[in-house]
Image (cartoon, rainbow, N blue to C red; front, side, top):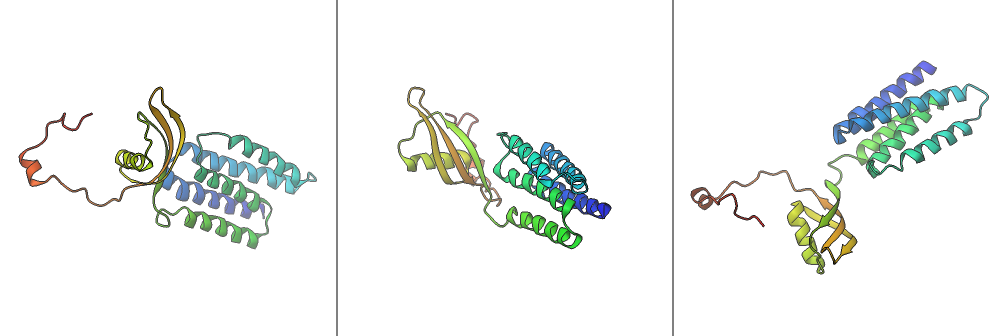
Length: 201
């Protein structure tokens, strides 16, 4: 029984970390963190389930560890989702009956695959930007951001304005530009190319 559960858990965390996460996000450090966390939780919970120690001790321990780890600013909200699914897989595979175990693994991985698929939602990014100009007009601010980001701005939140240094800090959510072909230079531009300094500010 334990070997079957271990095989299922290793298969599930491989799909989660290598197939779903790494191919979409490419962060090797979190890939190792997901694998280590999942296997560690599976090992400890499997031991607790077969001993007289209550499972509440194990759940409380890993709850504290997960809260401490998630205080880092280097992990995004999307990566937190992978983080919790890695924890859930370790817990489920350590204590669930075989049929329920396989079903929950398919449910967790399938839901994560669908929810994070790039074709399901527009490709959006979040950036914290500091501009060396203060825009009083929201329309002018949006136009400036779209020109800099070369994408459609979906949400802007002004977090700081400094009139002394003439700058503003923004939390920007924008949609990435399409991947269509980039138009080539016109006939006039080919005959009279602009010098390198043209357009510099």
